[in-house]
Image (tube, rainbow, N blue to C red; front, side, top):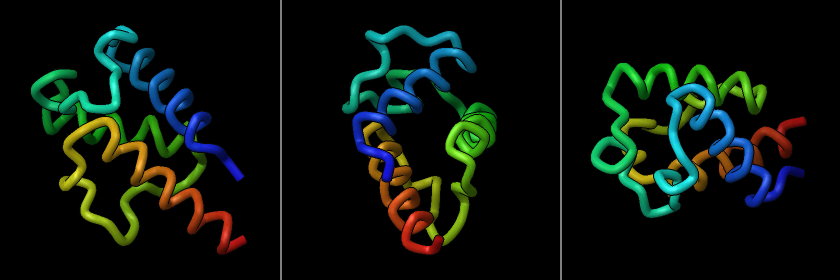
Length: 88
């Protein structure tokens, strides 16, 4: 089972690479649009990148548009990872 620390590390690595972000921008309370600067098109790219990184679909059973902060994103991936593991 993937740990929350691993989720944070992998998510931040993917976001830094895809969107040229810094560690200072990637704090759990950062608002994805206002603080990190991701718009709606970037959100689509973010989903694709994270799906590839974690090897699971992120759009299932949850309104991804309700994710506002990085912490929301970590929570969402952690929840899906648990469900994914339980389904194996």
